[in-house]
Image (cartoon, rainbow, N blue to C red):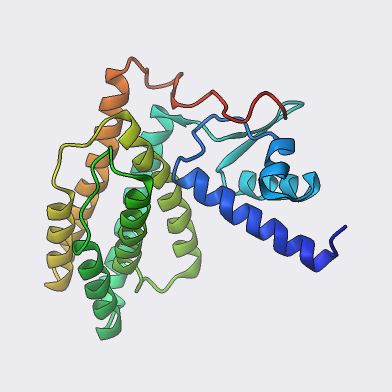
Length: 244
């Protein structure tokens, strides 16, 4: 049996691995998360897996079902629109605050993040997962840099939660269909407006960028016959088997 400190370390490691898989949709929305099989995968006790899954429930990435174990949180059209509208409000607020408060160091961090993102191509849907992971990491860095001068810790924590939940929908979109748009050009327009100090234009471009992603995903899902309220965008099956 591991000691208390070792158990906390193992729990954190399992939590981090599962969190990354959930956000990247390597674990599909709605997928069952059997404790026994996850224990075997990570070579840890069931108690450690259960604690890691409980943390992910608090993160909103996993749901606990009475007498039925754990499952990756589903993605639905209704939730997508709610999330998109909420994220636009928060992301635009944090960008306005950053542009009003951010100094030379903040501007430099935005420039560095933008150059790194611009240097890597936006991968097509059929590209290997490693390419999507690499681009997504730089994409997250760029968006985080834009709002990095906000100065309010609680607001930024909420913003991070919204970003991670939105990332699940964005990552899932490549399984729905490829998005036919010039994302790099949209990022470039946002970046230029920020560097020019035009807060109104920067916020408008950011809001349109976020809403277009949500609309593209929703339209693609509806084209597959999903309604706004009931069905999930994806998921429901399991690659782990039927254990709980």
